[in-house]
Amino acid sequence: MITALSVTVPDKRKGLKRLIDFLRKDKVDVQVNRARGVYLKHVTYTSYSGKINIKKIDRIIGAQRNHLLCSENLKLPKEHGYKRFYSPVFTARLCTNMALYVIRNCSCSEKIKLGIYDPDALSTDFLLLALRNCCDVIVVTNNSQPYFDELNRAMDELGATAVITNQTSELSDRDFIVAPSTIKEKLSLRHDALVLTNGCPQSETGGMIYYKYYLRMPNGFDRIKPIELDEEYFCSALYTLASQYELGSIVPTVCRNYFSSQTVKSLCTYVDRFA
Image (cartoon, rainbow, N blue to C red):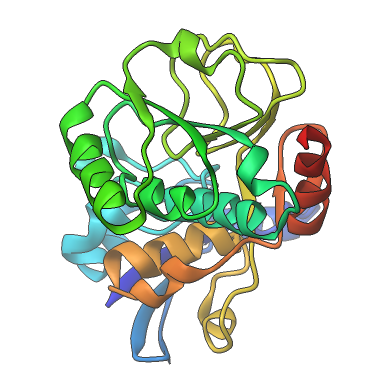
């Protein structure tokens, strides 16, 4: 079972009604919903004071207080061990799934100069899949051995090879960069390079960068998702906490940055420019 916390603060009324609201006790509603074998305990806290009384929810939340599903705008009492659930693993899958779809469906995959930026070697399986379509691949990582293991497999199965290095400068001529982890260092990329990554880059990075993914959630899960949580975040919890690993095959329909969005089809059209 996974647990979500929603907090609602009723609009402040005027006059006597406002005084009545001030004297009212906060309410806690608990619902347990089920979809596709997953149970969600949804705790809704109605606060008339604008604050959360931990004593009212602590026993209900229980051991799940350190991986609680909630809005990123909700301030949790960390001194009581409360922590919002977050994991980059599912978003990394969305990133590589979308990249792989583009590689397989554009008309010039064999001509793409592909770069994989994965410092901690968290998505090594993407290399073999990419090499089934791409001939020119450079991997930049600080943990090379897992990638050399995957490269040996690619050579045995496909007769394909790639460059594995720790030098980020090797990405400067790449058409398409896939970064399954958040980019935390400066990357000097071409201004027209397509970059799919996991989270907004924390350092200056060139290229056309997309890092937020939108997907069609499987039927059933939409019925139990708290309204304030987006599909990517909720599916991340299902994938990580509820072992719903089939979600790892989802290809996002749209990716975004702060200013624009792209569909998988428009990304294919953009990559075809590199032919």
